Image (cartoon, helix red, strand yellow):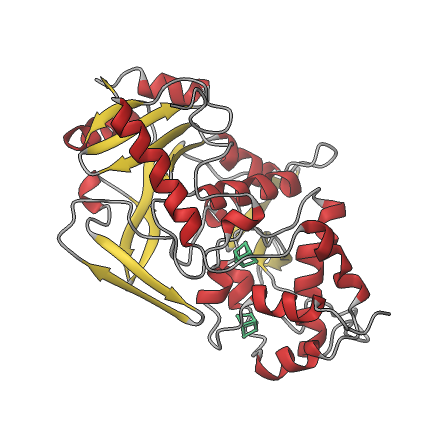
Length: 376
Ligand code: SF4
Ligand code: SF4
């Protein structure tokens, strides 16, 4: 049996019976956390406020294919047998639309106020989405100019990760090194077994919660089942991304004919950037009241597929769909290696499942990098 069960976790996980999940919720609530996690809404797994474990998706599995996402419900008691839905952790720290500050004319000028943020615990977070959050941290918490809105939410976040026991056909986190077993960056880790959960902590914040639970010793068979489940999930994956060295060659393939073929299919709808847990582009608008004594600074998600994203006033840098798709892929997979010290993809596969025309970045990038391509 491994002495190290997960990356950076030396201690032996312990067992939380299925019937004790409510106790975890109670401890979190008593510690002042609002609990968010997976629940079924509008035919998909969504991250939402959870009053109790009853709202978790019991017996739910999913079928994900390019341009296709469907849930199925069976008799199983398992709560985490699905793969992620369209939403990752991104909206919890980097909201799709938020008022950065409001200004009201006072006798001595405008006053700025930051919104209140409640401590939030998120249960059921997957390894690829934690890896994506760490990329967002790098972007929004840069030492020289940290974003106070992001930082405020991030500091109040407690993450309860869960190993993936299955992969969807769109998953390829094993090839990016971001899953399916939990890596780093979470507070409490869990793995689901038929009879309950293995549980461990990775931070002091997490330990403050787990030490209040009545936990049992996990036997060797349970630990083996945990390791086998994530191993099976990795072997199930049908897609993969080329390695980061190969991806750097994307910038030598800017004139490859395949960009035109993708552009014929791409609708430039921006779904892929909206569901992507690592995309961080936004626009900021200063909205003034007609009375002239109040204003709001509003931030909303933007996308490199939006025609205005590259608008310089008198011309658009990327006026065609071909140029927008090429920008998305080359920046995310090659440019980010310089800016973020890693590729901007954690293999979650959302952009494949939620693309209305089923464009699959693993196939597109392989076609662009293939031998015999036109180098510039
Ligand atoms: S790749 Fe798909 S999801 Fe992304 S903009 Fe094009 S059509 Fe929309
Ligand atoms: S590029 Fe696609 S597969 Fe990669 S992290 Fe973003 S949504 Fe997931």
